[in-house]
Amino acid sequence: MQFSPQSKVPGRLKIYLITDMEGVCGVVDFQDYCSKDGIFRDLGRKLLTEEVNAAVSGFFIGGATEVVVVDGHGGGGWIAPDLLDERAKLHCGSSSCPWDELFDDYDALAFVGQHPKAGTPYGHFSHTQTGECIDFRVNGLSIGEFGQFALVAMQHQVPVIFASGCEALAKEAEELVSGIVTVGVKRGTCPAPNPASKDFTRGMGLAQAGATHLSPVLARSLIKLGACQAAERVRTPGALYSCPDLHGPYSCEAEYRDSSEKITKMFGRFIPARSIKTAEFERLGDAFEEFYRLEWLDPAELKAQA
Ligand SMILES: [Zn+2]
Image (spheres, helix red, strand yellow):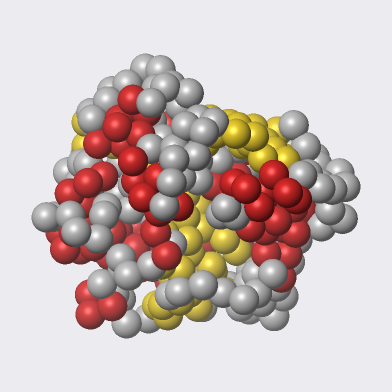
């Protein structure tokens, strides 16, 4: 599908900015930087918040009128509110809003610190969902977490204007959304991470932890510049944005390998490899929401519902 966005309120450019930790420059491993008891957690939060500030700054220079930052990693608590640019608003915690209505009051969607989908060559911490997920598809199209939000927004004619993360994420974003501005801040060293292998999650700390990072200061300059260009572009009359055509009804499916130690602990027991497939839905966002519900169901309940 292809469209030229219209501002919902004349003169307004209100941006929904989704954040994550794994794609931030200087965030070098999962255990120390991205988990609640990580020894470099505070440094990770600062690195994330500084990147978000760079994007916020660029967006306002480019003509944004409002930026709402969504603290997206692991349920929130990662943006350091005391360091956040005073022009930004911060949304934390879960939202009761259906996915298909998430972007109703926004003019554009953007991402900072995003990671590529599971198994992406040269991705840094590539994964989809929990890390056990091998491949996720909607109506046969393989996507990651970037793609889930991006496709819902685009379906509602809300353009996806900017994404930063590792170089592999930048490539994934450009392949899915034409018209987006991207910035790569690091490059993973693993040519073929294999999400079907049990070393893959271990690899969230080891096999996939290799990466060459830009200086975080340079990364922020590039993010600020890219965000400014993205805001200017979306305000340009006739600017086009496009993504693959998907037609309803919509259904999601994914394969998972055996649960890792972390997920085993979360569920209170080992979960053998499984597949999840949703029913068909009229709205795309409803299919994603249903998938997230099934993913966190106890596997016995999941079986009963199948
Ligand atoms: Zn994350």
